[in-house]
Every structure is written in C-alpha cells, then in structure tokens.
Image (cartoon, rainbow, N blue to C red; front, side):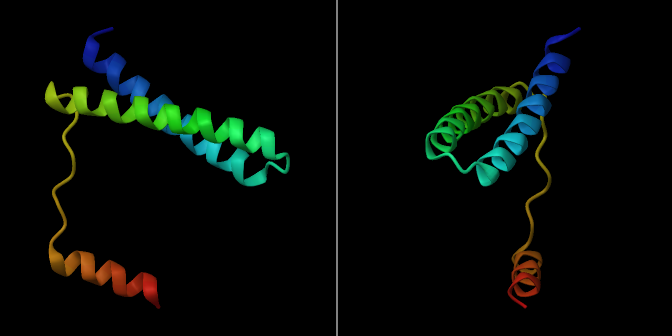
Length: 81
C-alpha cells in the first residue's frame, strides 16, 4: 500500500471516528464520560487537521473549489429560512 492510500485511509477513518464521538457525546448522560469523549474527540480533530495539512502539501488531497460569494449567500439564506 502506498503512502497516499494510507494517508487517505487514515483520514477517512478519523472522520468516521469523529462522527461516532459526536454521537456518543450528545447521548452521554454521565458528565465524566462526556468530558472524556470530548477530550478524545478534540485530540483526534487536531490529529486529523495535521494529517490533512501534510496530505495537502504532498498533493494527496485537493480541496474543492472555493464557493463564490453568491453561492455562500444562497446557502446562508436557505439555512436562515
């Protein structure tokens, strides 16, 4: 397996983990458990961002084209309704 594949696989896995942590946090009644999950999530978010920056630098990840002001305003208006 090449480096690009491994990096993208890890990024995908961390993204799925972050979703699972968010669900668990929102459903946890125990404050200590919530705080522990939040700490783990925060750590994973930092790790994901650092790995993303490496992937982007190496050309493994190409972000989507930036939205225009009109597109941003359209989405904003739709969400505010």
